[in-house]
Length: 462
Image 1 (tube, rainbow, N blue to C red):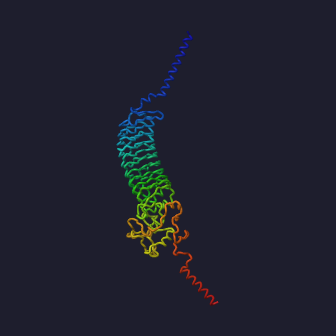
Image 2 (tube, rainbow, N blue to C red):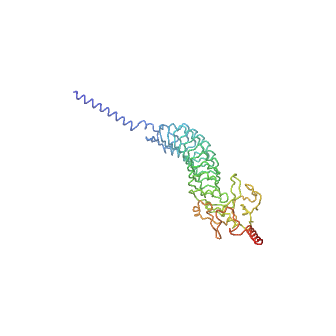
Image 3 (cartoon, rainbow, N blue to C red):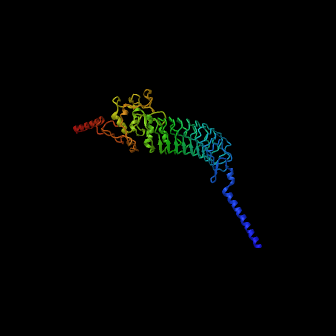
């Protein structure tokens, strides 16, 4: 009897232990509380906690999203507004692309303190943003707002987004970028602005982007680029400006992007007169991967690549005065270039004359012994409204494209010997006044005559 009671007691204890173990396992694996908290029409996944409510025709952000959800997917619904009380949870990734969002209240995302990625792309009705719409997102790293038909951006829209690294603004309707718009984005590395309607880049438009690595501005309507527009972009490696309306690009603007590796400037109506000299000189020194730059004007250079022009194509152009942005100085050329013009200057140019660009070709300005003024004053009648090639310039020898990189590093390597004779050596400091150094000049003949007369007199009186 005692043995039976002992066996029954042991069996009861084993049953209770097994039941408790089963209940613990069921609580750990099944997590009924988590399933009950998942919003209606959504699917929830543990580790990491993910709430997926995509393509459910939702018109508002659903209630009941678990507070500890790390990823919330609300894309491809019909959500129209985002209010300050729309998000009562913390998450790291929030996708809202492909909705009908028309309005985002200031501070709508302020509860999402640890949000790292926000995708608002493909909301074509989101044409306007309030200042402070992204307030509180100081840990945001990636912001997508492509294809939203945004026409303007408030000046403080990116205020205090210090952690942002990727900003997607392509294919909107932006026509103007305010100064200092990106000034707080000190960690931004990628900025996508292509496919908009931007017309100009001002001096301070990219101020503060000291860590930017790639800047895409192609397929806009850019006509004007300020000479200091890229001054803070010292770490830029990729710059796309193709398919715009740029005719001139200041050479100084490219000197500020010393780390550039890939540059695309094709699809622009390049003007290859004197205004292109600074950019051409930059290309001679820069060793980068670049697209072609096809000249549209002047007519004599149409179809040529700006990069493959040569020094003598700019020989008649005044150089900018280092102390003035608008002033000019007398033109200075290399020895070989000056030699070529001494051999080929037009018959109408008198001896001792210097060249200046003119609407009628090359005009001679008589030499004056009076000390010149710097910058020299050029009569307004000889300053053309648009630079065109003279007959002398059009007759200059052309440089083949394949010679461009072969001659890299030698400032005069593009000037070759011509059929009749070669130019003087680079060591010649002064412009040669005679064709041969062995020719007896009048001064030398006079000295020889005095020497001979002295010897004759000594012989007669000795």
